[in-house]
Length: 190
Image (cartoon, one colour):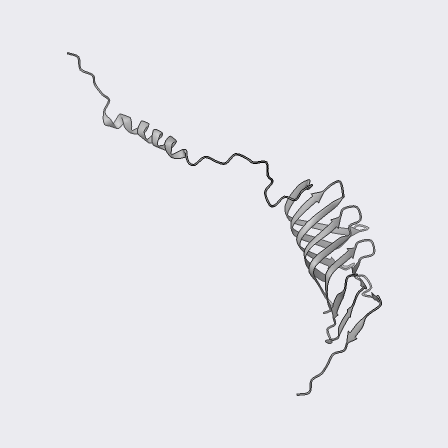
């Protein structure tokens, strides 16, 4: 009578561990791609960039830094569609002239112009503040323009309102359109 010898139990241990790992690696099946783009993509977008920083220069001099959480590029139109935007404006000596914040913007690659939208606020180093639904930065002129209504707060408490204003970042001069109203500072006796 012949006897079949089985290997010792310790010889099966590595095989059992390997088999257990293979079975454990088989989890629920992943879903097959359905051809639908994730929500981060916008129709017609060529690229999506996250954490964007761009410098806008005029004749080699840095005039503004444009930061955005997300940028969608539309190469055919020469546009970047930006989300959650901050622009920092600089003077000739590199000093900060002001900071603009908005919810979104369109940046024209050919001109360097930026149209910022969504509760836009510009805080200038002079202590002045602009608020508007839309503010455009005109790169070649180094100006900001609000043409859909604005509120302009001066450091002395004066509030200026109107439909149209252009602020030259280089000279600090302002040009106002029709319909402008100014409310001077009101002192309340104590």
